[in-house]
Image 1 (cartoon, rainbow, N blue to C red):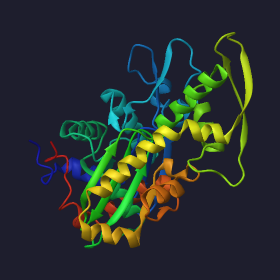
Image 2: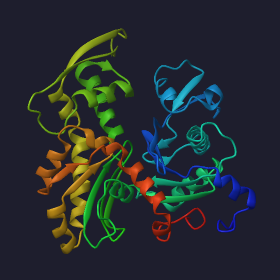
Image 3: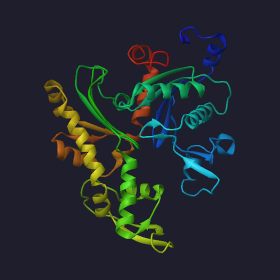
Image 4: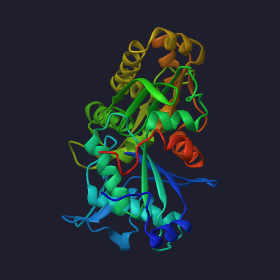
Length: 357
């Protein structure tokens, strides 16, 4: 096994000229945080490849935003894919190429860089899945890899007292997973990892449009509906949106006007499952920790926390105040940045590439 503490001179030298990076490797979006610079990259976790191969298009530049714009619009010989599913690597080779692209982009195209990398991962993934993340990052150019659970990274990112003997609860609603955790003393007291999140919300909207209007829409249109008029709780002023798609019967383009009330009904099932995960985690909390949560409340992060009224429905269903963090989508990535700034403290208690199996 390679000893990371006895780096080869060349690797050590390359590390001196590299930027240590924190990565929120999400199913929907990947964010990169660089020490002392903050968030430097926020792009969709999408890669465009030639059909039947793992060859990335445009000399490896068809990654992120450029690739997402191709979703649902590619010719027959091009496929825009998401290499992660439910927070877990589904395509190792493409994930490695994507990570290499992001590392190179942060370093402005410089070759032969060897940064230390902190990657936030779902708390519910297996040891084998953790090893897959580490291997992909190392092959992409990282000289050392640390993994941190997304809830802990999110708690650190929004400034919760996670290292104190006090209970803090965080709910990270991402693209592929919802991570619910109660934190204390830099550890997890109780947690639930649910593979229901933003992607399932989009799928629920797609199904609703097909059943209600016989209208076929794609992922990007469903996400646009969710952002524009989606909600988890009744709105003071309900909204509407014109939606375009393809008629399921006639096959021709068509438009309909969709109301926010019906979108809320479509989102009811995934929202209920998320609330069920929160309840399950609360029921596993020790009494003293539960008492802390009555005062400190539930903190919502991740892109899904931007869904209108999600804090209200969580508060109503649990009886505990729920708050959406400032800039919730970047909370986990910001937490990896704080980790980088305090490596001597955190690296003693979190696994690295040499002992995560």
